[in-house]
Length: 585
Image 1: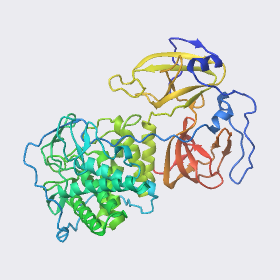
Image 2: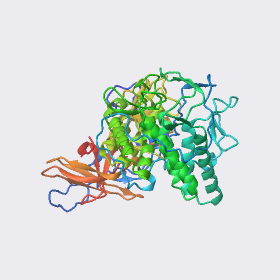
Image 3: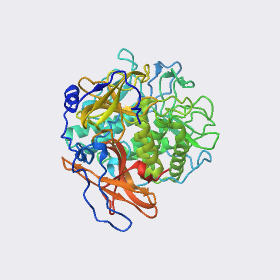
Image 4: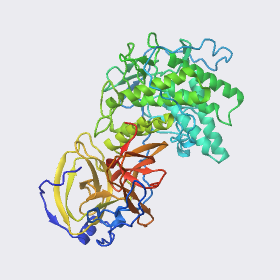
């Protein structure tokens, strides 16, 4: 909660019309009569109640949603090489092998796990809706099907290459190629234009072919080499001479090969090749760190890790969270296609590791950490973590990952707001702040949200103002940035019901439904919100004993994190998270 009690440096009395004019906002009529809620019939264990008065805020503002739910835009996929230096290989690279002889590919596949590790009973559920399956949220757009940027371009075979700059040569970069191919597969599934559909498939096949042709066959597995030297500026230990290998690429390749093998535009011969490639790549996740190359290890506490950046010595590495989870998505795909019991056990172990080490990933009330070894807060990766943990909940059906998603969302929510977002102010005095940020209001590492100025403003009646950001300020609570007028660039703290953002923001959809619990002998007000100008209602319930209800959605609704009840007598009503207990803790 923002501190709104400090003395001001510039106290102003501003009436409602004046504030609207100064900010460029538009106010709704503020009526302070007739705010009582509609009576509802009491049922067993419940009692009817009227709406609270919302501290003078009009009922129509509190009990309606003026816009469709706003989801945080998915950030671009992380650049695996960001923060480091790419240079030409300083030693000889493996010979390009070309297409394999499929008769000998699976001669001696591993048949045992690399070591014992902790497991928690996590399972890869099979009944996911299409949109919730791995990589379906990452289509390659038609505009990007032939990339030509500072760092990426297509070679003559239609394979995406990484280049440090436009003036330097390009290199195969397995993760970039895999993710580009997976995006093309996702677009192929939904594209209706035959020409575009064909090109998306051509691009995906080209990436898979390059991985297969440049593979290194060793230790009974296929590894996909990085053919350049690489050193990270901040992460000690991430210093490689080509060829080097990444568990992120090894795991993600499973998704690429398996998903390609499932497409209707792929021949039977190609499907056989892709399945063989998936099996051979999977074998690399069954090889321990007692020889090189390796990408899988067990830490000193007995937990399984898939290392995006393996160390020079056994059991060393960056212990990077996002790279491991992306690799786990490949295991999920592989399990769905093959039912391989070793993959089932690896997936269980990997989920157990992420569960166990979530407290080290989380950075309470700020951006989560990128890796376990260096523990550097990573604002640019935090939204990725939110999205990855949401998908782990879908993939496992386990509410623990959903609860982790909730915590990360509350710690450091996406700051983006759509045009037209509106802050509601109750009548009274409010403190406004200026902070050291980027020009658009996002966090600036150099200024660290330092407070620059503050002032108090007083409104005789409830009013509104446009907003362009909602985010956590370093060392403080959640704040809104006013978007226009005299107070443009000033921030005000989220403080329901005195100051809140109207509408539904940052929704998380759960699959399967989760469970919330109403505490015994406690009044809880539930809200049903109207849309398109309609005003909703409230219902206050009290139960003699703790009572459960399913919920399918969590969002920030009119300035508060709330859960939407999915069925039963309160279906469609929302409960504030501060009044209930949710599962997964």
